Length: 354
Image (tube, rainbow, N blue to C red; front, top):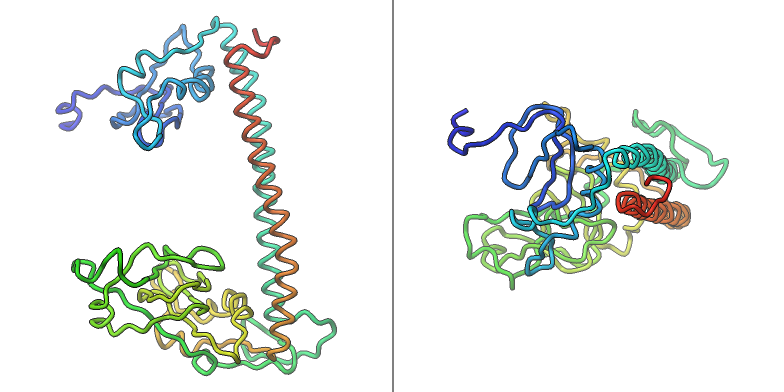
């Protein structure tokens, strides 16, 4: 209440229409509770001679055209550009017709988009299922199976071995230099990858750089190009190849390249195997420590079989990725159609609504 009094703020009633005119410009929403807002939002109050359902659509389509631009080309508003924005105001009956029409059309469009997003999720699940099946059971038919001795896994093909991680890989774990010391960080320093840098199958850059002094103080080991990174704290289970010599923070371990290893196989396999060796914290989140990493049980097929598995996964994944991209493009086209439909409706371009 003191804050309200000091800032002389006015309560926004239920049913008001909110519009964000700073930062994320153009977001809109009806408010379902009495509220106050910050300085980045203006609220249109309900009135008998206004159909706010119409203005919900109209402002999305038209108000942004009245915005100024900052030096970076981003749209911005101030009090003057809001007050003097030029809008198209149809008769109240027409506003209602347009709003009802768009409510119906956009609901159908939303369902179509939701269905396509659901399809994308199903395709991603299908890809994960293909990977899981390939790295745990192989891709050859009618293989003889044996008990793995691992509860979550069950049977594995004969000729595959169960081995602790520490006996398979040479790996290094990174460190984080004191963030309070400026002489540990420099734009011209060495690459230093954190979890936020991991981006898909290949990581090509680091946002932060560290100095030679930081490397010496933390006794850090360089990770060569082609190493396979695995995040084992916070966002556990992200896997990525590194395409530049780098250091990493303490939440990542790096498996070093070895001619006797098919790291492409392990890129897929670790996503399935390793998380099952994790501990859990009091909140149920998966966590690792040095011991649980070293003693994680992994399934090792023969090297020739690993290549066959990778070839199969990548062939099937490419098909699924193509389908996902096509579906995403369809969603973009539908979103563009929706914007066009709204614009034409609120500007009087659809004759049957006038």
